Image 1 (cartoon, rainbow, N blue to C red):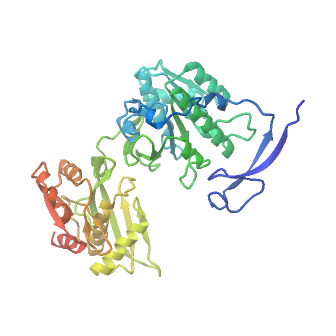
Image 2 (tube, rainbow, N blue to C red):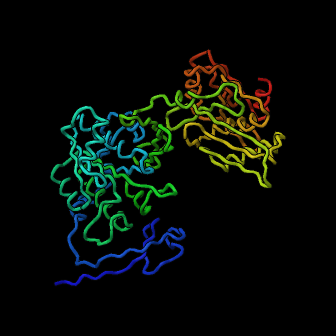
Image 3 (cartoon, helix red, strand yellow):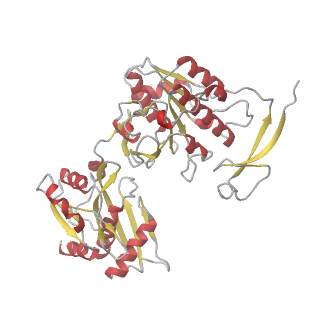
Length: 461
């Protein structure tokens, strides 16, 4: 009989760095208080599935490699396929992360059902729900049973690999990677070593067999993916499913994509029948906009190749405390502070004793620099109590000298505004060269070269 020993190790939850003793600061990623205690068993060495999954191809010269476009499968969910870069890549590994209850499993199950409808064999591994519970959820989002969708409740990695080798599916969904465990490791499921090892083995298996693999992951209270950061490095695509818990709308964005852009955005609506695609988010974000309200500005933003309009709301109130507050929801707070400083120093708007609040309606996070002018006008409109004309959209990047700089993809932004019935568009003067390219004559361009000219437009109505 072989004696099984156990040892105590401390592992960093951020980067997976191991230490025989607890450390306050990780020497690898320099994160504080990130080490957790793990008890692992020193079992005899066994042959794991890692060696079976690794590629055995010999090195070749780069000039001799015949490159071609990667093969993709269309799930039939337009928003999902676009965020992935045009479809699901064969052999690609995708990590889908989000808050509990946000709809990750629903989205993955809908995509699996659509692939099965197209004749692709799909294996859905449910580690957190029984097969009967998964079937109950599937009954809400699909109208008929799918013959090519296999469901199993299993968390043992070795058994999962046996199922994959036996069924040879085109796509595999693991829900979730935090509950899958490798028996040879000895540590509990969800630990850093388990998540790292299981994800690595499944990734090698998917790439060797050309399987599209989807790993569903939880997030921590800080919004980061639970487990080691190495989990984000070994996968090809990292998708975040975001949204307010009490809002029906969800946003899918890519923060890493080896086969496409990381700027694409997909919008969904959670209904009793599952997730429904929102093909025109602009109408949704502007549906409840109040007319002639001060501090309200419509801004055309770009997410990848897709333009849509969002409403930026500003509120300015006299501070009742010694220190003023600048709060932003959906916009970078540091960028807001910079724009407020430009209004104070360059335009003489006295905001030093005012609390400033900014909100992007719909739960959207705006990172496009073209929203700078809209944010500045929202704050100024709320402070001056002068509404921005409701038929106007605003775009432009603001510099530290209060100049309004040109923006990219302006033609797509203007066409989106015209499509929704806006009559005027405030643009940087340096972008006037595209005036002859505008397909419609219904929208009027208002060129501005600095913030002062934009404020004059608001004051004069």
